[in-house]
Image 1: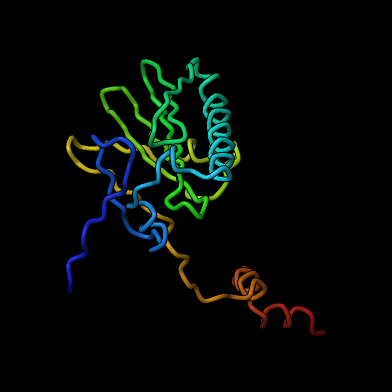
Image 2: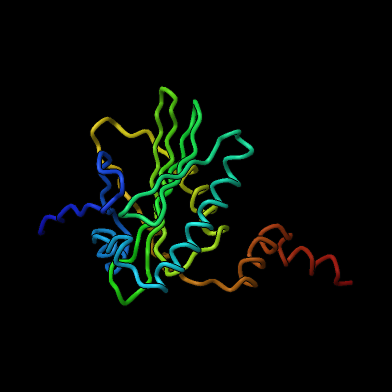
Length: 198
């Protein structure tokens, strides 16, 4: 059996290694490893879409950070549409909105990294690839990232995992399932007929 080659994602934070794991389709795997075109090469439509995603990311991160008392900060970067972060003494959220991969299309990635600054040091990284985003989609991405945080040993890469395919189970009719327990709890048929007959 041939050995599966390790594929690394082009994650914005170069100090963190991110491996593309199982259940991620080939198109997304290819996109995760590519370099984006950069902010200077974007067309007008790409700039509009990127700005809309950047605003949606800011709204989503602010909505999560405000109840925790965290301030959202942004930094300009020539390779990304926006880089946002919100952090405190215990947790840190980071968002990156990448530029598209080609001049003719608008698909781009929103990366999210959640880090717990406690001694356990749980970390989680997630992404969403699309042509346009809403603040609710990005907020769900941030919450799911936080939910999937794991303790990562020092020097180990983080493994991105997709959704496993649904398992094919034999379909059983609901009427047959409901009838089986009822028959088991009912008294034997011979006793009931015996009491009815004169």
